[in-house]
Amino acid sequence: MKAVCFDDVVDRKGSGSAKWDDAARLFGSEDVLPMWVADMDFPSPPAVLEALAARVQHGIFGYPSPHSYAYDAVADWLDKRLDWKADPGWMVSTPGVVTAITLAVQTFTKPGDKIIIQPPVYPPFFSCVLNNNRTLIENPLIHQAGEYRMDFDDLANKARDAKMLILCSPHNPVGRVWSRPELTTLAKICADNGVLIVSDEIHGDLVYAGYRHIPVASLESAIPNQAVTFIAPSKTFNTAGLYTSVAIIPDNNLRREFAKTAQLLGIGKNNVFGITALEAAYRYGAPWLDRLLPYLADNAQYLTRYIADNIPAIKVDKPQGTFLAWLDCRDLGLAPAALAKFFVQKAKVGLNDGLTFGKQGSGFMRLNFGCPRPVLTEGLHRIRQAVSSQL
Image 1 (tube, rainbow, N blue to C red):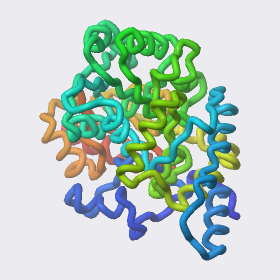
Image 2 (image 1 turned 180 degrees about the vertical axis):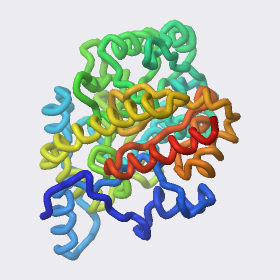
Image 3 (image 1 turned 180 degrees about the horizontal axis):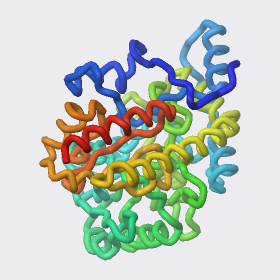
Image 4 (image 1 turned 120 degrees about the vertical axis):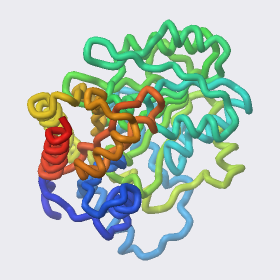
């Protein structure tokens, strides 16, 4: 199979891609460069493609065995990459992390219960709480010394009567990789107040040199019934469309309750292609990922330097993880609605409106740099030219 070159631009138009094929409808223009949906514009690892091709060649796609989920491959990956010895027996299959968060909300809380999130944060965190008639409590991140941090004093106050905290680790959209001391403090506050941590760690493998993702459930101070963790190969290996993820729940009672909810809703199984891709990615995808991470890190460095040198009206912290950049556009002096229109109509770039990440995102936009450098360069050039004409 052809060697991977991350600079190669693959035409995704006409492939049924939400990112590319829905861009014209969502942004109202055919010539908008889509840099929004959090999937990458790179083919999945050769090992994944080969495994899927072999599965297709077999030709029969019947019901998968419950023993085919390759939890041992997940456990080996977590042990080698993150130094977390997660028992395969702790794992439950789910169709996706957002689905898993919803299942956790339905399983471990009841209507009216208070659930904490830390905005600006991934938009489904809001809907998973509100759509299930739970009470949303915000513990906003604070920006200090060039990075976002958790407000632990505010958290300690709000955790007193909360039932759950939904953690984004690493954080989408601000790109923070939480440190061990930060996670330890968070875990202690939650433990002291009986708050269950539901941790979305879907970006856990996408962390750059100098930082380390620490699964909150792996902390020495963590207790088994305190944390529920959700992971997936979808961001790391660009397999989001295969809708396969894993819940890791060390506590037996919590795991049984969670699996029961999934069974009652009829969503406790995945498709054969998702299972095949997951196993191949975790067993054989490490060499590909080890080439991808420096490329993404270089993209992050290029983006932050380009903006600092050429678009000083926009500010951005260099991401510590993920392939997402959180652009502070407040110095452009545009109201939120006008800002969103500016990027579409003037810059011809489709980004995520910061307001969808909470009111703390007013004046911000999210940019996906998980793409070949030529695409990133084109997007930044468009933004520079639009800002130059605006000021």
